Image (cartoon, rainbow over all chains, first blue to last red; front, side, top):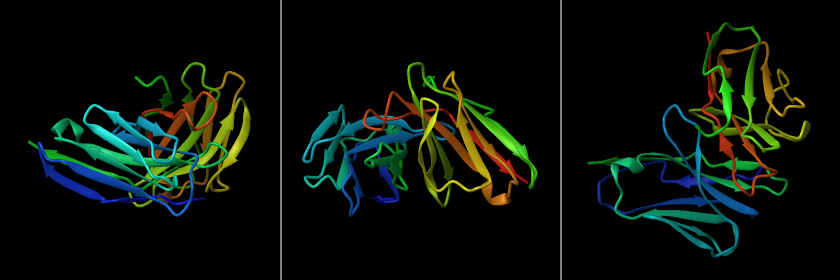
Amino acid sequence: TQLLEQSPQFLSIQEGENLTVYCNSSSVFSSLQWYRQEPGEGPVLLVTVVTGGEVKKLKRLTFQFGDARKDSSLHITAAQPGDTGLYLCAGEEYGNKLVFGAGTILRVKS
Amino acid sequence: DSGVTQTPKHLITATGQRVTLRCSPRSGDLSVYWYQQSLDQGLQFLIQYYNGEERAKGNILERFSAQQFPDLHSELNLSSLELGDSALYFCASSVTGGAEGYTFGSGTRLTVV
């Protein structure tokens, strides 16, 4: 099983600040996905990136897939308290199984 | 409501016991995945079923087993429970594979005492 490392593990910022979360691996994935999980709930899919170098935007969130399809980043502009949660990256191994990183806990203070 | 239904939401049981967790996938989804989430291990893949057949296996203990029925619902059976089995167990579903993303249920919180 391939491993995904996320950094930072924990991030506490003020409302309005920008932040970037990283997801790195030494292995190639056929796709990479980002999920957000709130306490007591299951992860919810935010985006899937498939092509190396791909950039996707979802309102204030920008997702990038590395050229070699081994890493990804999530950038949030002007963070809001509603962005608070656990952000998980997940790589799709060939054969459809998703491998998850340990997650980044984001806390946005108002 | 994600469309994936997991029951029960909470389960408290004693060591050595056996429990069954149930999952109904989103309508139209053929693949079901089971994950275990604990504070120190994160989300760990247990097993995948596709249209009734086992497709992939992860770090699933021999004390654990699962199956997917003809109506596509799935059950995860955990036996000879140990304290360390306490965790959140999630079921997820997708149409075919992982490329389109998974839809997760709200999970079952298992506490072994």
